[in-house]
Length: 193
Image (tube, rainbow, N blue to C red; front, side, top):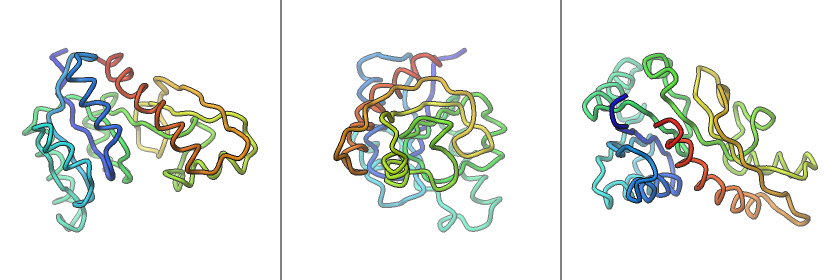
C-alpha cells in the first residue's frame, strides 16, 4: 500500500486531530495528514490544521445544499488530496453511504466509550459519559473501530479502559477518557499503516 494520505474529519476543538499531527511529526505512523474536513465552519480543528500547514475545508449541508452537491464535494476533496485513509476524530455526522462504500475498511472512528455497549444514535459527547455514570459501570474507556453504514458499528481495532471513580461527573470522566483517546488513535493509524 502507498504511504498513508489521511483525511481527518472533525466537528469541534480537534484535540484528537492534534494528537495525530503530533504523532505524524514524530514518525509514529508512515503517513501524512493531507486534509482536515469539518461540517462546522467555527471548528477549532480547522485552525489547528491551518497552523500545521494542512489543507482545511468546511463542507456542510448548509454550504452545499442538496445531497449530490454535498457528497460530491466530499468525494472531490478526498480525491484532490489523494486520501487513502479517513479518520473520524470527533466528527458529529454520519458519513454519507457513498463515502463509506468507496472507502470501505479505510475509515477509522474514535468513540469516547466502550463499544458496543455505549454506541449508536445520540451516544456522543457528554451524553455517552452521562450514560456510563448512570449505568453504575465501574469502567469506561475509548474505542477505535472501522466505520460501516451504522453509527458506532464495525470491527473494533483498539479499546482501552479507564476507571469510573466515585464522584465522577460527565466532565471529569470525559477528561480521563480523552487522555486515552489521544494515545489509541495514533496507535490505530499506525496499526493500519
